[in-house]
Each structure stands twice: as structure tokens, then as C-alpha cells.
Length: 453
Image (cartoon, rainbow, N blue to C red; front, side, top):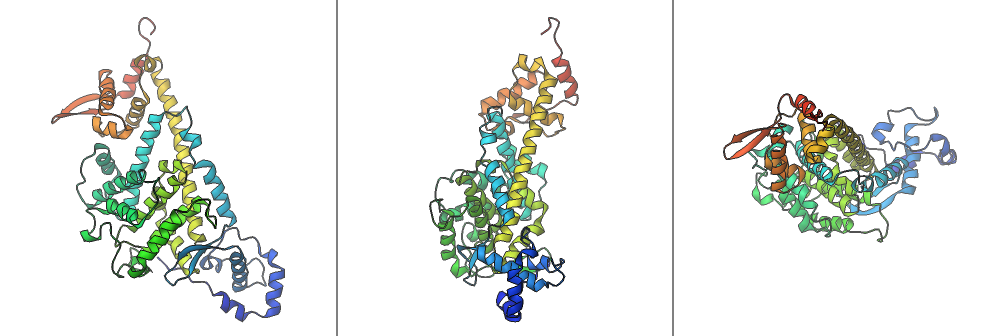
């Protein structure tokens, strides 16, 4: 990855401009356009200036002075001791408005038309998605199909990549249990331990802050991207991070909760307190903060799925902040777009699921009511009609829907009795497969019987 060009410093720009020119620029600042895109110098320098008589350096000077006037200081510092800042730029305000409206969960979690079992099943699927894609961002190579089979069946991981995914899944489930407790350095280490157990070369580094300064952030071509702060500073830095994470809306200065969660993600990655697994821990910390602050729908989305599609933009968001005097606005802009896209994907999914349910209900017709198929069984049939070839087991069905073993067993036995699943014995257990002509079977079963029922 190419390192972004660092902007010219404000003192240097101010020393080079004549007073009368500076006064004219300030007086006519309105004609330079609003700072709607919050461009970094590396991008701005290649764009045409708003006015032919305006140089890129003058344009940057005016934008930076405007940003400085709006900047908010954070109780978090870079490795040179300078406080990070952020600006509530217009695109950030728009994103926060969207997330506030759509991430609370009341429109989905409180909707009586959405079955609680369906919500639990989707939550399980999204926990799997986040575990898989977050691990893939860190280098895991296991296919999605194999990873899903492992997590649904509950079997032990077979290799390093599967172990990463297995651990990530466990970590995501763990943070749901600690959202009511304040964050501490020990809690951070506990999250890291769950996420990295059995995956690091040195077992002593699992769940422990690094003790040396050898860690470097490199891209896949070996380009040096980031040198983290010194290990000797980590105790103080992690405590400051926890103090920031535990602040409430009553604390001053006020920080919007989504901004706080995003900055926690950024700072964990910036500090790089662990020898490995920092990205996984940072994303888990983001989820912890969002759910803790009332954005419960975030449990149902995967930000890593979006990040995996744009890994270079993810890293560039860090680099833009680091090269522009600790202005975390760049990272926030990127991360908030990721959250928005993840939420939009969720709502598209829910609309699709509603359509699919209506289609399968229509296909089953009166038969569904006669046989009392539940939404878990309907969801299974929908997946089978889509072409799923992997076997269903009582354990996988139980884990997918978060129900008791007996309930999962009854679901599958009922479908097998109806001929909608084929039962095969494997060892001491049973596996269930959808017949190749499942749609025809459903159509035949849905037809009224001789007495019209």
C-alpha cells in the first residue's frame, strides 16, 4: 500500500503566505465551498481547486483552519503525546442520525410480526459471519462452508484457521455477557485470550499485553505502515482507553456513543497492545461498546463482512488519521459508512426473509396449518429449497436456533415423518438430508385431501 502524503504543516503555510493574501482568503472563505467530503491532503492535492487563483496549499490552509475551529480534543494521545481530535463534520452528523434511527433495534427486536426464534437464528448466523470474516481479515483461509459446518455442529477445530474462527465466535458470544460491566485492562486481556487461545506462536502472549517494541504493522507486500507506541506506555494507555470506554452521557465533555465506540476500535488498533490479534480484539471491543450503549441491533450485523470487501480503505482510514496530526475524523467517516452499510444489509435481509417466508407459506398452503410447522422448520425448508447439500443434525439445528436438544430433535423427526427430510444413520447419531425433489413433495403434500382438507 502506498503511504498517503503528509499534509503541509499549518505553521509552514502561515509563514509562507503574505498577510494581505491571508486576509483576503479569510474574507472570501465562503467561495471555497463547504468541507462536505473532508478530504485528506493526499486526495485534495490532485483535485481542481474551487477557484483558478487559489493554490492547493491555500485551499488546504483554509480548510484546516476551519477544522481546527470545530475540533474536539480526546483524552487519548498518539505516541508523541499529542491528543487525538475529531470534527463533527456534516457527513458524520448524517451518519449518526441514520445509525441512531436504525441501530437501536426497536423496529426489529420489538416487532411482534418477527418471530423470536427467527431473530435468534439470524443472530447466530451473524455471529458466525463476524467470526469468519474477522478471522479472514487476519489471514484465516478456511472456506465459509467448512467454517459454518464446524460452528453449527460444535466440533473441535482441525487447524490454525479453524481455531481462529472458533475463537472469534467464542469471543463474540463472550462480549454479550459482559456489556453490563465496566471495561478494565484485565477484561481486554480476557477478550484477547478467548480470541487467540491456541493460535499464537508464543503461548505466553495469549491474553497479555506485549512486553517489547518489536511489533510492526505491515501490508502484504512488506511495506511498513505503522509503528505502535512503546510497550512501556501500554499500562497507562490501556487504562486511559478503559476510562474513555466507561464514560456515560453525563460525563463532560460529551461524546456521542457511536463516536465513542468507533474511537475505541481505532485506538485499540493504533496502540496495538498485543503481539497479534489486535484487529479481532478491536472489532470485538467495538461491538461491546455499541451494545453496552443501547445499540442492540448491532449484534445482528457484521462489520467485518463490509471491511473484508475494502481492506485497503480500512487501513487507509488509519493512515489518514496518523499522517494528519491525529485527526480521527478520517477513521470515523470510514467506520460510520461501514456501520450504515451493515445496517442497510440487515434491513434488505429482513425484507428478503419476509418474502421467502411468504413464498414458502404460500407453497405449503393449508398443509402448513394442518401440520403446524413452526418457523424453525420453515427456515430449514427455505435453506433446503435454496440448494443446501450439507446434512442437518440435531446438534446443528439446536445451535442454529438456540433451542433445547429435545425441541431440535422433534423438529427434525416431524419433518422426516412428513417425507420432507431423509434420515440416515451415521455412527450412533442420525443425519438428515433434503430430498432432491423436495419442492415437488411439498407441492403434493400441500394439495387438499379427498375430503378437502
